[in-house]
Image 1: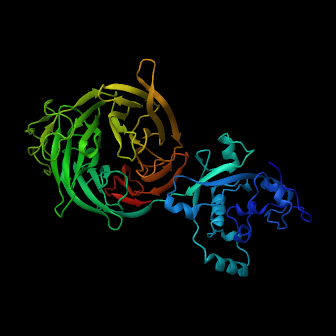
Image 2: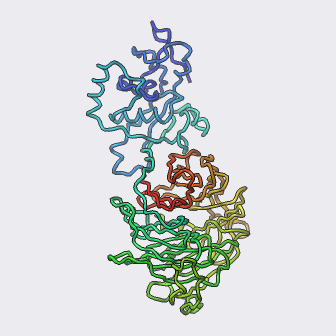
Image 3: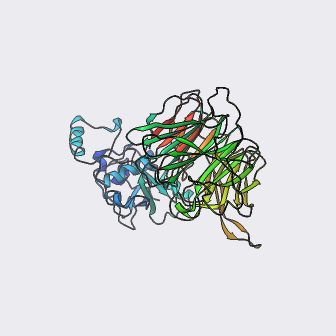
Length: 569
């Protein structure tokens, strides 16, 4: 690094024009004259030939502000090809102040794209200058806020400090990747007030949850503390509209999971404190939408069912659905889900008596009398696999990633589980063998898996969110699988209370959302330890209990205020 040499006749020294362009924010009358540094030259060598003095301090005490660093801007590969031509800038190295952060770099990118560059009120010049600049800006496209990656981490400090922390050499131009910043969640409507707390949410798309994004045309299912489950039709235009509801359980619902079943039907699984695990069929077509009891899953759990996940089997649409569930005592069961017309949906399970005769079991009576007295002749399913996975409540469960493209690619022979016993585990279902155990220091209250890998995020009562890379693939000396990349990374505690739910975006493998008993919803980019945005989802004093992420990036939140909240990102 070098200090800029003072220019003749100016004791305060002089910065290069690019330094002024990357200030916070750069005044338009300065950034309009920005120019790049040729490869192999430092910005300080340019400043001596620059007749314009743009040093805002104007004295020798600000010489540290003249430190420069060369950077090369590269558009991140995650930007869609349809937008790349409008957002790409020349790859030539340019010089910026070493302490510049994302706001200053975003101003530089907007200037290079010939877009408007916003400025603070304190940086405005005379009225005549303002009028001229406004006339020029009126013909430009609006500014686009950008985020930046240096060494794979989001830029949250000065560019030089970040480069040094990531071990990058400053002898060459530092590569800075940029992409449009994510929008802050905006309130997009809410459902009607329900009779009791909303304790569980699950979203499934009309195309089978493949994450393709259908303009918000999927289905949202909710479970309530009154034992009911509800289905909402979602759309970008109309928001939420309740389509069907049913009193499914005699106790509070602890978990729900939805899956598009093909044709016009969806399958909704729900587990409850009354020790029952049920599936209902949602008729997604026609005007008479309803939730009809499909099957009862018995003989596996003898305590509260606290977590459940539905997934498509190995054969895709023709492979049927599989269901995994966890209970309060640490038990895990795997079930084959019957088809809508009878029999089982995958494998030869009839011979194994996995599907039994209709149940005659009586349900516990409800105080309100709103629940059916029996299962109405529903099919009874016995567990395909049942084992003790943890010493305490299984608070999170997910199938492993299948290795294919899309968020719907799952490996139905691999289960990821998390528990109140402080551990996260990876299981081989067919062998009932634990492949990997990661022990933490706190109770795990919720878990979510990244849509395109076996990286999971866990929520905890200490206000923290932790990331675990549990991918297994290498073979050990004994032939068993060992971890090929295991890590425990904690995001900085930002919530003010118990973190109750965590969900990954089905569209972006770096983005996740959390909610907490503090009533807020936060979005995170896992390449930074700080949250991207925080919104007040529930009134002060109310708790956020559950989350769901739509295929179009919409976030849904439920809690003790008894309303489903919708946020558009």
